[in-house]
Image 1 (cartoon, rainbow, N blue to C red):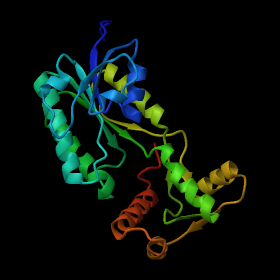
Image 2: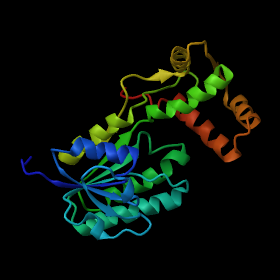
Image 3: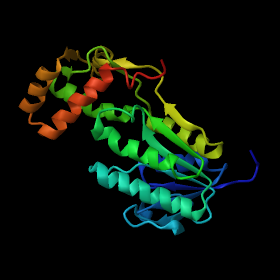
Length: 257
């Protein structure tokens, strides 16, 4: 690779992942922060206001490489359309390496998490530009919600059985994304945490953090559905959570095997 400092566009650069990627790029690349919230960018990078619902090639002008960070829109159709628009704008601007933040196991269920990623990766492959899809595992930061529920009830209730997840820190995902942006296109790259944690290990982790016992409660899908509905969880989310637990049981998020 050349020693010349490349210009790298990072979408969502005001968010948690995007801002961390920009930090990892400093001194190695010239970051261009593309965001709909430029007022939230606190560092000295070049900032361009853009929204995936109305984005054009000017957002990526001059960038040799670009990171398209997946949005958090709850509607998968809208979300995939946003990603396509960003990819098309980057291609039209002449970007020569496209990197997209995807999800481990996105070629299977549950669709709540995966449908937009699958469609986006297909569009990425068809773009005609060298690409890398960085498939991150589930964020370790997401454990905070599970821990809060365990703190309130003294139990960690799940349908994941003996399945495990190699939860990964967001900053590690950012470091990998920055490294990929500075290197050659690699196709699919998976990013996992150091070790997989099953329900029993999670309950033990929450016990240590909270300083009191947390009981792991392993339910089958029907019992878990009843538990979630009884707690007031909206039915569409219940369906998605059951499917997520099934994917965990199938080993989708267990990491390198």
